[in-house]
Every structure is written in C-alpha cells, then in structure tokens.
Length: 173
Image (cartoon, rainbow, N blue to C red):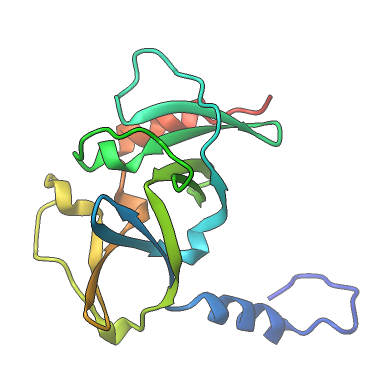
C-alpha cells in the first residue's frame, strides 16, 4: 500500500491489518436515553467539553468553535441537531472529534459509552426513506445483547449546504 517506505521492518500487510482492526468497531454514545454509534474510523479523539466561542447567525445546533491545539474546530450539538431539548453540559458531556471529507468537526454528545464490535450481520438497515427525510443519517440499527443502537451515517448527518457552512468555519489559527 505504501508507495515508498525505507523501513525494512514495515510490511504492507501491517497497513491492511490496521484497517481491518477498525472493521465492525463503533464508538457508542448517548443522547438522552437513546444509544447511538458511529464508525470508529471517523473518530480521531474524544475530549471533554470546553469553552465554545459562539458564531452569530448560524443554525442553533452549530454551537460555535473550539480551539484544539491551534486548530479552530466547529462543534455541533448532536442533541439539538436531532431535535432533543437543550440541556446544560456537565462532566459527562463529551466532544467526538471526527474527520469527514477533509474537515475536522466536533460532535457534542451527552455521554460517550464504549467501543463495541457490531458485525454487519447484527445490523438491520433503516426503513426505506428518501433523501429529504430526517432519517437520512441513519445507517442502520445494531443489535447488541438486548439493546438496539442507532448507527449513524456520519457522511449524511449534514446536508451539503450545511456542511459547506461548517467547512468554511474550519480554519487554522
């Protein structure tokens, strides 16, 4: 897979096994009483809630921007994006830093739960729905023990015009 690597101990199979190690792995989190998950491959890190600078005239779910190691990162409150009632942040509130389409975005969630293996055969597809519906961001429903976890399609969580607004807020300090 590597075009050039002068390390004689490196094997292309190492890259393949790294990709395989993320297969079927999801980071799970809570919004209210519901369990959600996204593929771990999108998550670069998880941080606690921190000072958010408000950006005027943005959708209410776009809470603003944070400064993370000299990078300005827009943060979305998933609770508000999904139509839940706003809630004060607490010590369990977390920000999932995700990489999506060459942009870095923070997703504010009520609480991060754990990393789970959810094999494809334990995921049911969502009901058939058009792109205009609010369920376009649901990739499927994972069945883990007696729990159903809503698996999000992170690439569809924002319509293109909203993603462009957020992408434009993604700048370096």
